[in-house]
Length: 112
Length: 288
Image (cartoon, each protein chain N blue to C red):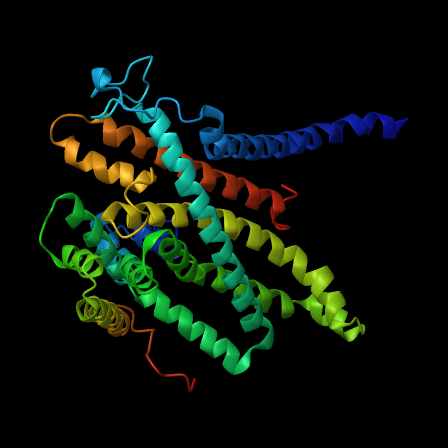
Protein backbone atom coordinates (compact mmCIF):
# COMPACT_ATOMS: atom_id res chain seq x y z
CA UNK A 1 0.00 0.00 0.00
CA UNK A 2 2.45 2.65 1.20
CA UNK A 3 4.82 1.89 -1.67
CA UNK A 4 2.27 2.66 -4.39
CA UNK A 5 2.59 5.61 -6.74
CA UNK A 6 -0.38 7.59 -5.46
CA UNK A 7 0.84 7.43 -1.88
CA UNK A 8 4.22 8.67 -3.11
CA UNK A 9 2.40 11.49 -4.89
CA UNK A 10 0.34 12.32 -1.82
CA UNK A 11 3.50 12.40 0.23
CA UNK A 12 5.10 14.67 -2.35
CA UNK A 13 2.15 17.02 -1.95
CA UNK A 14 3.00 17.22 1.72
CA UNK A 15 0.21 15.19 3.23
CA UNK A 16 0.83 13.91 6.71
CA UNK A 17 1.12 10.18 7.37
CA UNK A 18 -2.20 10.15 9.21
CA UNK A 19 -4.03 11.75 6.29
CA UNK A 20 -2.40 9.36 3.84
CA UNK A 21 -3.55 6.39 5.89
CA UNK A 22 -7.02 7.91 6.35
CA UNK A 23 -7.71 8.92 2.75
CA UNK A 24 -5.65 6.44 0.73
CA UNK A 25 -4.78 3.47 2.89
CA UNK A 26 -7.75 2.71 5.09
CA UNK A 27 -10.35 1.62 2.52
CA UNK A 28 -7.88 -0.42 0.54
CA UNK A 29 -6.66 -2.23 3.62
CA UNK A 30 -10.22 -2.79 4.83
CA UNK A 31 -11.24 -4.95 1.88
CA UNK A 32 -9.04 -8.02 2.48
CA UNK A 33 -9.48 -7.54 6.22
CA UNK A 34 -13.26 -7.88 5.88
CA UNK A 35 -12.95 -10.91 3.61
CA UNK A 36 -10.73 -12.68 6.13
CA UNK A 37 -12.88 -11.56 9.05
CA UNK A 38 -16.06 -13.06 7.67
CA UNK A 39 -14.34 -16.10 6.19
CA UNK A 40 -13.10 -16.99 9.68
CA UNK A 41 -16.63 -16.86 11.13
CA UNK A 42 -16.90 -20.62 10.76
CA UNK A 43 -13.72 -21.04 12.79
CA UNK A 44 -15.64 -19.43 15.62
CA UNK A 45 -17.80 -22.51 16.08
CA UNK A 46 -14.93 -24.95 15.81
CA UNK A 47 -12.90 -22.92 18.26
CA UNK A 48 -15.74 -22.64 20.75
CA UNK A 49 -16.13 -26.43 20.75
CA UNK A 50 -12.54 -26.92 21.90
CA UNK A 51 -12.26 -23.90 24.20
CA UNK A 52 -15.50 -24.63 26.00
CA UNK A 53 -14.34 -28.20 26.52
CA UNK A 54 -11.07 -26.98 28.05
CA UNK A 55 -12.59 -24.39 30.37
CA UNK A 56 -15.85 -26.29 31.02
CA UNK A 57 -17.87 -23.27 29.86
CA UNK A 58 -21.53 -24.03 29.15
CA UNK A 59 -21.96 -22.64 25.63
CA UNK A 60 -22.88 -23.75 22.14
CA UNK A 61 -19.64 -25.70 21.69
CA UNK A 62 -20.27 -27.68 24.86
CA UNK A 63 -23.84 -28.28 23.66
CA UNK A 64 -22.47 -29.66 20.38
CA UNK A 65 -20.19 -32.11 22.19
CA UNK A 66 -22.95 -33.20 24.55
CA UNK A 67 -25.38 -33.63 21.66
CA UNK A 68 -22.89 -35.90 19.89
CA UNK A 69 -21.99 -37.87 23.00
CA UNK A 70 -25.62 -38.38 24.04
CA UNK A 71 -26.93 -39.10 20.51
CA UNK A 72 -29.17 -36.03 20.48
CA UNK A 73 -29.56 -35.91 16.70
CA UNK A 74 -32.07 -33.03 16.36
CA UNK A 75 -29.88 -30.75 18.51
CA UNK A 76 -26.72 -31.69 16.60
CA UNK A 77 -28.30 -31.17 13.17
CA UNK A 78 -29.89 -27.96 14.46
CA UNK A 79 -26.52 -26.60 15.57
CA UNK A 80 -24.93 -27.51 12.24
CA UNK A 81 -27.79 -25.87 10.34
CA UNK A 82 -27.74 -22.77 12.51
CA UNK A 83 -23.99 -22.35 12.23
CA UNK A 84 -24.19 -22.72 8.45
CA UNK A 85 -26.88 -20.02 8.44
CA UNK A 86 -24.63 -17.85 10.60
CA UNK A 87 -21.69 -18.23 8.22
CA UNK A 88 -23.96 -17.59 5.24
CA UNK A 89 -25.27 -14.39 6.83
CA UNK A 90 -21.74 -13.27 7.59
CA UNK A 91 -20.60 -13.81 4.02
CA UNK A 92 -23.64 -11.98 2.68
CA UNK A 93 -22.87 -9.06 5.00
CA UNK A 94 -19.31 -9.02 3.67
CA UNK A 95 -20.62 -9.03 0.09
CA UNK A 96 -22.95 -6.15 0.91
CA UNK A 97 -20.14 -4.24 2.58
CA UNK A 98 -17.81 -4.40 -0.43
CA UNK A 99 -19.63 -1.83 -2.64
CA UNK A 100 -19.87 0.56 0.33
CA UNK A 101 -16.13 0.38 0.97
CA UNK A 102 -15.01 0.23 -2.63
CA UNK A 103 -17.44 1.88 -5.11
CA UNK A 104 -15.66 0.14 -7.99
CA UNK A 105 -17.22 -3.14 -6.91
CA UNK A 106 -20.83 -3.64 -7.98
CA UNK A 107 -22.77 -6.76 -7.14
CA UNK A 108 -24.61 -8.55 -9.92
CA UNK A 109 -23.55 -6.00 -12.50
CA UNK A 110 -22.05 -8.18 -15.19
CA UNK A 111 -23.38 -6.29 -18.20
CA UNK A 112 -20.24 -4.15 -18.62
CA UNK B 1 41.55 -20.02 -24.73
CA UNK B 2 38.91 -17.45 -23.96
CA UNK B 3 36.35 -20.15 -23.44
CA UNK B 4 38.43 -21.85 -20.82
CA UNK B 5 38.92 -18.53 -19.06
CA UNK B 6 35.25 -17.65 -18.99
CA UNK B 7 34.10 -21.08 -17.88
CA UNK B 8 35.00 -20.70 -14.17
CA UNK B 9 33.10 -17.43 -14.04
CA UNK B 10 29.81 -19.20 -14.70
CA UNK B 11 30.54 -21.93 -12.20
CA UNK B 12 29.84 -20.23 -8.83
CA UNK B 13 26.09 -19.63 -9.36
CA UNK B 14 25.78 -23.23 -10.53
CA UNK B 15 27.39 -24.42 -7.33
CA UNK B 16 25.02 -22.31 -5.25
CA UNK B 17 22.10 -23.84 -7.10
CA UNK B 18 23.29 -27.25 -6.08
CA UNK B 19 23.61 -26.12 -2.49
CA UNK B 20 20.05 -24.83 -2.38
CA UNK B 21 18.86 -28.11 -3.86
CA UNK B 22 20.92 -30.08 -1.38
CA UNK B 23 19.59 -28.03 1.51
CA UNK B 24 16.02 -28.69 0.44
CA UNK B 25 16.75 -32.38 0.01
CA UNK B 26 18.41 -32.49 3.43
CA UNK B 27 15.36 -30.82 4.99
CA UNK B 28 13.09 -33.40 3.34
CA UNK B 29 15.22 -36.31 4.52
CA UNK B 30 15.51 -34.89 8.04
CA UNK B 31 11.76 -34.31 8.31
CA UNK B 32 10.95 -37.77 6.96
CA UNK B 33 13.36 -39.45 9.39
CA UNK B 34 11.86 -37.56 12.33
CA UNK B 35 8.29 -38.49 11.39
CA UNK B 36 9.13 -42.09 10.48
CA UNK B 37 10.95 -42.35 13.82
CA UNK B 38 7.82 -41.27 15.68
CA UNK B 39 5.62 -43.66 13.69
CA UNK B 40 7.80 -46.75 14.25
CA UNK B 41 8.84 -45.82 17.82
CA UNK B 42 6.25 -48.08 19.56
CA UNK B 43 7.73 -51.16 17.86
CA UNK B 44 11.27 -50.12 18.77
CA UNK B 45 10.52 -49.18 22.35
CA UNK B 46 8.06 -51.99 22.99
CA UNK B 47 5.70 -51.82 25.93
CA UNK B 48 8.37 -51.05 28.53
CA UNK B 49 7.68 -48.00 30.65
CA UNK B 50 3.94 -48.21 30.07
CA UNK B 51 3.29 -50.34 33.16
CA UNK B 52 2.17 -48.56 36.31
CA UNK B 53 4.94 -47.82 38.82
CA UNK B 54 3.16 -46.21 41.73
CA UNK B 55 6.41 -45.31 43.52
CA UNK B 56 7.35 -43.01 40.64
CA UNK B 57 4.12 -41.18 40.01
CA UNK B 58 3.74 -37.50 39.17
CA UNK B 59 7.43 -36.88 38.72
CA UNK B 60 8.48 -33.71 36.90
CA UNK B 61 10.66 -34.04 33.80
CA UNK B 62 14.14 -35.38 34.59
CA UNK B 63 16.90 -37.22 32.75
CA UNK B 64 15.41 -40.66 33.39
CA UNK B 65 11.90 -39.44 32.45
CA UNK B 66 12.33 -36.57 29.95
CA UNK B 67 8.58 -35.94 29.82
CA UNK B 68 7.95 -36.75 33.49
CA UNK B 69 5.54 -39.43 34.69
CA UNK B 70 1.76 -39.42 35.07
CA UNK B 71 -0.47 -40.16 38.07
CA UNK B 72 0.08 -43.90 37.64
CA UNK B 73 3.86 -43.66 37.30
CA UNK B 74 3.88 -44.31 33.56
CA UNK B 75 6.64 -42.69 31.52
CA UNK B 76 5.07 -39.79 29.62
CA UNK B 77 7.65 -39.87 26.80
CA UNK B 78 6.76 -43.47 25.98
CA UNK B 79 3.04 -42.75 26.26
CA UNK B 80 3.34 -39.66 24.06
CA UNK B 81 5.27 -41.56 21.40
CA UNK B 82 2.74 -44.40 21.44
CA UNK B 83 -0.13 -41.94 21.22
CA UNK B 84 1.44 -39.81 18.55
CA UNK B 85 2.30 -42.87 16.47
CA UNK B 86 -1.32 -44.03 16.62
CA UNK B 87 -2.61 -40.55 15.81
CA UNK B 88 -0.15 -40.15 12.93
CA UNK B 89 -1.20 -43.47 11.43
CA UNK B 90 -4.90 -42.63 11.70
CA UNK B 91 -4.17 -39.18 10.27
CA UNK B 92 -2.11 -40.60 7.41
CA UNK B 93 -4.82 -43.05 6.43
CA UNK B 94 -7.56 -40.41 6.58
CA UNK B 95 -5.49 -37.83 4.71
CA UNK B 96 -4.63 -40.34 1.96
CA UNK B 97 -8.28 -41.22 1.43
CA UNK B 98 -9.10 -37.53 1.47
CA UNK B 99 -6.42 -36.79 -1.11
CA UNK B 100 -7.83 -39.53 -3.36
CA UNK B 101 -11.32 -38.01 -3.18
CA UNK B 102 -9.94 -34.51 -3.71
CA UNK B 103 -7.86 -35.51 -6.73
CA UNK B 104 -10.67 -37.47 -8.32
CA UNK B 105 -13.24 -34.72 -7.96
CA UNK B 106 -10.75 -31.99 -8.87
CA UNK B 107 -9.72 -33.81 -12.06
CA UNK B 108 -13.32 -34.55 -13.03
CA UNK B 109 -14.39 -30.95 -12.36
CA UNK B 110 -11.44 -29.54 -14.26
CA UNK B 111 -11.63 -31.79 -17.32
CA UNK B 112 -15.35 -32.45 -17.78
CA UNK B 113 -16.56 -28.97 -16.81
CA UNK B 114 -20.19 -27.96 -17.31
CA UNK B 115 -22.72 -29.08 -14.75
CA UNK B 116 -20.28 -31.60 -13.20
CA UNK B 117 -17.95 -28.71 -12.42
CA UNK B 118 -20.86 -26.72 -10.99
CA UNK B 119 -21.94 -29.60 -8.74
CA UNK B 120 -18.42 -30.18 -7.41
CA UNK B 121 -17.92 -26.46 -6.75
CA UNK B 122 -21.27 -26.34 -4.99
CA UNK B 123 -20.30 -29.25 -2.72
CA UNK B 124 -17.00 -27.54 -1.95
CA UNK B 125 -18.82 -24.32 -1.09
CA UNK B 126 -21.16 -26.18 1.24
CA UNK B 127 -18.18 -27.77 3.00
CA UNK B 128 -16.47 -24.40 3.32
CA UNK B 129 -19.46 -22.67 4.82
CA UNK B 130 -20.00 -25.30 7.50
CA UNK B 131 -17.79 -24.97 10.57
CA UNK B 132 -15.14 -27.62 10.15
CA UNK B 133 -15.10 -29.10 13.63
CA UNK B 134 -18.89 -29.13 13.92
CA UNK B 135 -19.11 -30.95 10.58
CA UNK B 136 -16.44 -33.40 11.76
CA UNK B 137 -18.47 -34.12 14.88
CA UNK B 138 -21.63 -34.59 12.82
CA UNK B 139 -20.01 -37.02 10.36
CA UNK B 140 -18.13 -38.93 13.06
CA UNK B 141 -21.36 -39.27 14.97
CA UNK B 142 -23.40 -40.22 11.91
CA UNK B 143 -21.15 -43.16 10.98
CA UNK B 144 -21.08 -44.46 14.52
CA UNK B 145 -18.02 -42.90 16.15
CA UNK B 146 -14.92 -44.79 17.20
CA UNK B 147 -11.73 -45.11 15.17
CA UNK B 148 -13.70 -45.83 12.00
CA UNK B 149 -15.82 -42.74 12.58
CA UNK B 150 -12.77 -40.51 12.97
CA UNK B 151 -11.13 -41.83 9.81
CA UNK B 152 -14.30 -41.45 7.74
CA UNK B 153 -15.05 -38.00 9.16
CA UNK B 154 -11.55 -36.66 8.53
CA UNK B 155 -11.40 -38.27 5.08
CA UNK B 156 -14.77 -36.84 4.02
CA UNK B 157 -14.15 -33.27 5.16
CA UNK B 158 -10.55 -32.52 4.16
CA UNK B 159 -10.60 -33.01 0.40
CA UNK B 160 -12.16 -29.65 -0.52
CA UNK B 161 -9.07 -27.44 -0.62
CA UNK B 162 -7.05 -30.02 -2.57
CA UNK B 163 -9.90 -30.48 -5.06
CA UNK B 164 -9.99 -26.73 -5.61
CA UNK B 165 -6.24 -26.52 -6.14
CA UNK B 166 -6.22 -29.42 -8.60
CA UNK B 167 -9.23 -28.11 -10.50
CA UNK B 168 -7.61 -24.68 -10.81
CA UNK B 169 -4.33 -26.25 -11.95
CA UNK B 170 -6.06 -28.39 -14.58
CA UNK B 171 -8.06 -25.40 -15.86
CA UNK B 172 -4.95 -23.24 -15.99
CA UNK B 173 -2.79 -25.80 -17.76
CA UNK B 174 -5.46 -26.84 -20.26
CA UNK B 175 -5.92 -23.22 -21.35
CA UNK B 176 -2.18 -22.58 -21.58
CA UNK B 177 -0.72 -21.72 -24.95
CA UNK B 178 1.56 -24.73 -25.25
CA UNK B 179 -1.30 -27.13 -24.52
CA UNK B 180 -3.48 -25.44 -27.16
CA UNK B 181 -0.57 -25.66 -29.54
CA UNK B 182 -0.06 -29.30 -28.70
CA UNK B 183 -3.71 -29.95 -29.42
CA UNK B 184 -3.47 -28.18 -32.76
CA UNK B 185 -0.45 -30.29 -33.61
CA UNK B 186 -2.71 -33.31 -33.34
CA UNK B 187 -1.42 -34.88 -30.15
CA UNK B 188 -3.94 -37.33 -28.66
CA UNK B 189 -5.63 -36.18 -25.38
CA UNK B 190 -3.90 -38.94 -23.40
CA UNK B 191 -0.51 -37.82 -24.68
CA UNK B 192 -1.30 -34.25 -23.60
CA UNK B 193 -2.50 -35.46 -20.21
CA UNK B 194 0.64 -37.54 -19.78
CA UNK B 195 3.18 -34.94 -20.92
CA UNK B 196 1.58 -31.60 -20.04
CA UNK B 197 -0.90 -32.19 -17.21
CA UNK B 198 0.82 -34.78 -15.05
CA UNK B 199 4.03 -32.77 -14.41
CA UNK B 200 1.89 -29.93 -13.05
CA UNK B 201 -0.76 -31.87 -11.20
CA UNK B 202 1.40 -34.54 -9.53
CA UNK B 203 3.51 -32.06 -7.49
CA UNK B 204 0.32 -30.31 -6.38
CA UNK B 205 -1.12 -33.68 -5.40
CA UNK B 206 1.96 -34.78 -3.44
CA UNK B 207 2.36 -31.46 -1.68
CA UNK B 208 -1.36 -31.23 -1.06
CA UNK B 209 -1.30 -34.70 0.45
CA UNK B 210 1.60 -33.86 2.75
CA UNK B 211 0.04 -30.55 3.78
CA UNK B 212 -3.23 -32.42 4.49
CA UNK B 213 -1.50 -34.58 7.11
CA UNK B 214 -1.13 -31.84 9.75
CA UNK B 215 -4.80 -30.89 9.37
CA UNK B 216 -5.93 -34.50 9.56
CA UNK B 217 -3.76 -35.24 12.59
CA UNK B 218 -4.82 -32.11 14.46
CA UNK B 219 -8.50 -32.77 13.76
CA UNK B 220 -8.12 -36.40 14.78
CA UNK B 221 -6.54 -35.19 18.03
CA UNK B 222 -9.31 -32.64 18.47
CA UNK B 223 -12.04 -35.25 17.98
CA UNK B 224 -10.36 -37.65 20.40
CA UNK B 225 -9.86 -34.75 22.81
CA UNK B 226 -13.57 -33.97 23.05
CA UNK B 227 -14.32 -37.66 23.44
CA UNK B 228 -15.96 -38.54 20.12
CA UNK B 229 -12.95 -40.10 18.45
CA UNK B 230 -10.82 -43.05 19.47
CA UNK B 231 -11.91 -45.06 22.46
CA UNK B 232 -10.48 -43.84 25.80
CA UNK B 233 -8.29 -46.89 26.46
CA UNK B 234 -6.27 -46.32 23.28
CA UNK B 235 -3.25 -44.11 23.96
CA UNK B 236 -4.03 -41.54 21.25
CA UNK B 237 -2.51 -38.09 21.64
CA UNK B 238 -5.93 -36.45 21.96
CA UNK B 239 -6.84 -38.80 24.80
CA UNK B 240 -3.55 -38.11 26.59
CA UNK B 241 -4.18 -34.37 26.29
CA UNK B 242 -7.77 -34.74 27.49
CA UNK B 243 -6.57 -36.72 30.51
CA UNK B 244 -3.92 -34.14 31.29
CA UNK B 245 -6.59 -31.41 31.38
CA UNK B 246 -7.83 -32.77 34.69
CA UNK B 247 -4.34 -32.53 36.18
CA UNK B 248 -3.26 -29.16 34.82
CA UNK B 249 -4.91 -27.19 37.61
CA UNK B 250 -3.07 -29.24 40.23
CA UNK B 251 0.29 -28.11 38.87
CA UNK B 252 1.33 -31.14 36.79
CA UNK B 253 2.05 -29.00 33.74
CA UNK B 254 4.29 -31.54 32.02
CA UNK B 255 1.36 -33.92 31.40
CA UNK B 256 -0.13 -31.47 28.91
CA UNK B 257 2.78 -29.32 27.76
CA UNK B 258 5.16 -32.13 26.75
CA UNK B 259 2.81 -34.26 24.60
CA UNK B 260 1.28 -31.07 23.18
CA UNK B 261 4.75 -29.81 22.27
CA UNK B 262 5.60 -33.11 20.59
CA UNK B 263 2.33 -32.96 18.61
CA UNK B 264 3.12 -29.39 17.56
CA UNK B 265 6.65 -30.40 16.53
CA UNK B 266 5.49 -33.30 14.36
CA UNK B 267 2.77 -31.21 12.72
CA UNK B 268 5.36 -28.53 12.01
CA UNK B 269 7.66 -31.21 10.57
CA UNK B 270 4.94 -32.23 8.11
CA UNK B 271 4.45 -28.61 7.14
CA UNK B 272 8.18 -28.15 6.61
CA UNK B 273 8.34 -31.37 4.59
CA UNK B 274 5.49 -30.22 2.37
CA UNK B 275 6.92 -26.76 1.74
CA UNK B 276 10.35 -28.14 0.83
CA UNK B 277 8.80 -30.82 -1.35
CA UNK B 278 6.78 -28.16 -3.15
CA UNK B 279 9.81 -26.03 -3.96
CA UNK B 280 11.62 -29.12 -5.23
CA UNK B 281 8.81 -30.65 -7.31
CA UNK B 282 7.00 -27.63 -8.66
CA UNK B 283 8.18 -26.91 -12.22
CA UNK B 284 8.01 -23.18 -11.43
CA UNK B 285 10.47 -23.26 -8.53
CA UNK B 286 12.46 -26.48 -8.98
CA UNK B 287 15.12 -24.69 -11.04
CA UNK B 288 15.77 -21.98 -8.44
